[in-house]
Amino acid sequence: MKRLFIGIGILVTFLIGLSSCGDSSKVTYSGPDYVMFADTMSLFPVQNSNDYFSVPVVSTVVCDHDRTFGVEVDDKNSNAIENKHYVIESNSVTIKAGERVANLKVRGLYDNIEKTDSLSITLRLVSEEDTKWKIYDGTRTRIEMMKSCPFNLDVFTGYCKVTSSFFQAYMTTTDMRLIKTEKAEEENTIILHDFFCKGYDIKLKFDPSNPLEPFVSMEGQVVGSTAEIFNTIHGNGKLMIDQPSIYTSYYNVCQSFVFQYMRAYVEGVDTVGTYINILEWISDEEAALLQKEGY
Image (tube, rainbow, N blue to C red; front, side, top):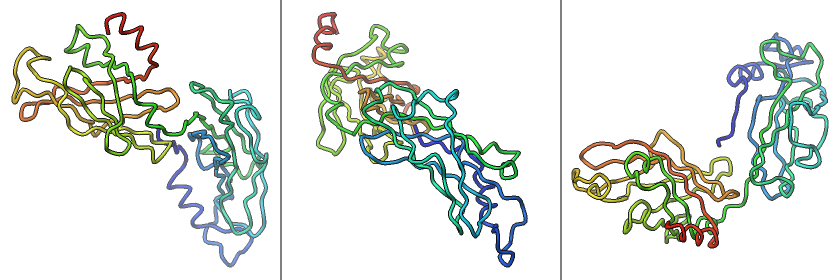
């Protein structure tokens, strides 16, 4: 879910940092003038606002005059529809005199994008052949669009379906648990009651600070007794879980779910393993049907 930057990085930074055009007294870079998209791919979270997403176009040189380049949508390699899913502010971009970067502006149309849509736009930069870098096809860039609903902690309260790879490994008579969740006193935190075992609640914290990084985290907590889960006592008899540092757990407000990595361990003994939990919030009506089925 992090923003993707797949471009030429340090090399472009080096080139545009040592260049000029049209003023021989300032020339420190004698290489060609290349113009390109800064990234070959980027992720655009479409929020309920009129904000535009910037697609940077860069040049390896600074010139003493404005330079304008056309931008085309590659319809064959795009499934997002212009003026339905998005609008482009202009079909050209101008790098001003004395500058190396210009931004093409794209705005997603929030109301026209479904929660589960997977949309993309491929753009092509129209430029002269001698400004194209042969070792890097910077004339094309792909923008992945995703609907980003406003954060609302209430979405993650109420009835929740819990499925886990831990169930398959150790709680083999459990295929899914139906639990209740509510807000905790801590900011952006919920309590998941009877998460794996009755009488053992855990807390989960949401980070809404960056729509490109909708992460959740969890500190070490007791999720059950080893006697109940493993039919024997290990260490102090408490099975702990926390967020493993090498994996990222995230939430989706639009689709009301959390995808969570969980490390299970017994303090002073060993790590049991790393498992995946999927938490899905459902309506009271759907929960009532599941309760009739025995959940």
